[in-house]
Length: 450
Image (cartoon, rainbow, N blue to C red; front, top):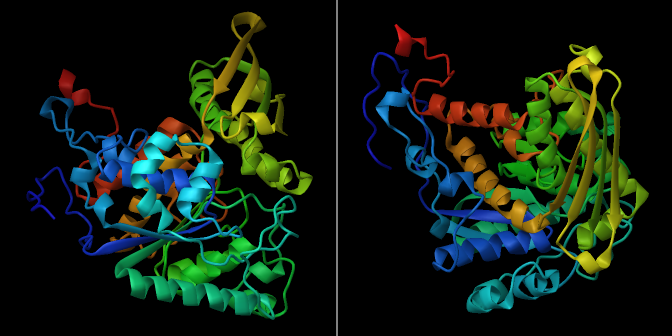
């Protein structure tokens, strides 16, 4: 790690951050389109075959000090992140395909990119998964763990984590959920404490979904956990307790990729200009495994809850009742196999302006779901590892500064989430400045005009 300059009177001393020495192991429940696109992308970048476009950790810069100081280093040069060459991978999946086969079937990446890295991808074979069709009704596969109860399955996952740590030589580990959306669940008595949760595991309580088993196993092993789906998973008192106790940071939920990304870009603009909103109709077509899973009403309910909360938190109808107090917000997702991973999202937005005169905006976003998600996975892996090595962040539990990447950001209990993409980015970068003892950027800057 490079030697840092001593802080000036305008700075505070930075927080203690351990150097990222050794390998960083990335463990992925769900080795489908998102996971394989992420891992293949990392290897392609390492071999100089492609650029890490969309990754804040790899391509983003951060302004330090005054605008006149002209200090805008790359983020990866400003904070001590793990290097891409230090990443090693494993994962779990209910299908037996290695990552090359899984990536080929997903159809996201061209063979011209996959074939040069085939030996590497083929070497990553899935471990048996914790899976239960009661939680994901549209999938089934043979590569599944067996156990007398959910506690035994959790112990098997813990064994996997220990084995991977040993065989890979990883100094540190991260778990990031890239699996399917589970059926809708609400917090219950089983989720309120470690004692209650472990009793529920032993009794095969229906309140414990497979994703929670991965989270429990990871946090018990002191491994940070990121939740890329809208599942309840770590958004529970027991997981907050475990995260803080074992200094294993958590964040989630639901990667912010296509249509919701557009909402968190557009809605802040409407609010900034005080343009009213009467309705926002969103519909999607998607043909990959995610689309198939979301064709089930229970899984769609979980996704719908994640998507619907965005506008309310950004637009604050209680503060602006005349503008946003009567919004009709509708979200639809339709499974359409011919489209594959190339999702299309249509938005019809009915707004109104001066004197109440109506206007409309139409958005047709032809996006590639996994292409948008892969750099999010990379950034979360590297930033969660940074948090785990930070004396100040590792004991906090929830890493709200990573809200930038999620549809439903986690917050401290009782605190509403910030959904405005631009505020989220400011929070993320100011957290990094804070860690390194740099002034926070407020954009007040009256000193230029003294």
